[in-house]
Image 1 (cartoon, helix red, strand yellow):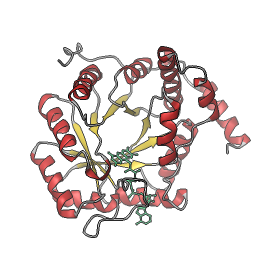
Image 2: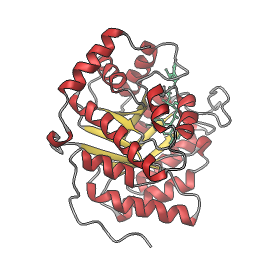
Image 3: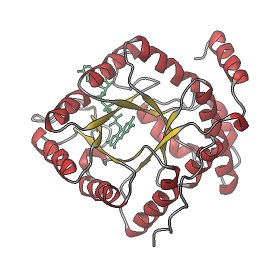
Image 4: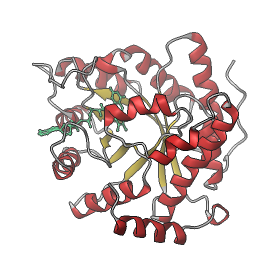
Length: 312
Ligand SMILES: Cc1cc2nc3c(=O)[nH]c(=O)nc-3n(C[C@H](O)[C@H](O)[C@H](O)COP(=O)(O)OP(=O)(O)OC[C@H]3O[C@@H](n4cnc5c(N)ncnc54)[C@H](O)[C@@H]3O)c2cc1C
């Protein structure tokens, strides 16, 4: 629950925020995609990629399905980006249901394909069961980071949780865990999605106080479908504010209006983060370009080169 002091602090921060017109465009962005399942989804992914590519993202990342279910598709997508684009790709990799040997082999294949950036994650057991490590596997993300570093000098991102991971006993234990991941060799963290700018800024400050000086990128999920988001939020411990639910009330049959509302909400979140000193943003694109593109545009980001021909 938000205290009166928190609300006052947030109100003061919002009042001091720059207007959109004042944003300098001095931000860095990265985009997350999931590996496509069908030819149609594949065409959509590349169309999205080519729309966002001129925004010169620092990197783009490709997720790894639960239990390694997308191993080949993730690899194929990441390898194609590495081959065809100057944008550095990052491959997500999880510990779930795989031995160290299997995971190490996947990592080596990435290195051999020229991929230098891994997003190292523990993952979740498919079906929502409590997590249990593979008997010959990495127990958690910190162990995976150390294992990857022993293979090659990868650039490694890890996950962070402004509202605390559901498996964690308390925020301090979660921060200690994040610290272990940095001590093992991670270079940046990307957060789970969240909707309260203060939750992120408090977390960032707590991480700094715990001696973490590596970048922590806020994970921005532009939401246009609250019920779908609620399912994801319940699983990862993100709270959905009541105002957000009510703002989408009555828009079920108005998809275009929903998109406009979604862009406004996410841009406002980013504007407040910018006011709090944040300059790097990671977007969960869900393989759609419009919302992320619109938000980046409102933050002052402009294409550095003409958009490429859309993928066939
Ligand atoms: C940016 C981002 C990208 C993601 N991408 C994917 C993806 O591609 N595929 C996928 O399946 N999932 C993905 N996830 C989800 C992620 O796999 C889950 O959130 C998972 O439950 C935790 O992963 P982790 O790497 O944070 O785990 P860990 O950092 O290992 O920690 C998980 C929890 O266990 C606790 N813990 C870990 N080790 C210890 C220990 N030694 N002692 C006590 N407690 C411990 C931690 O405190 C934490 O609460 C992503 C999440 C984020 C934020």
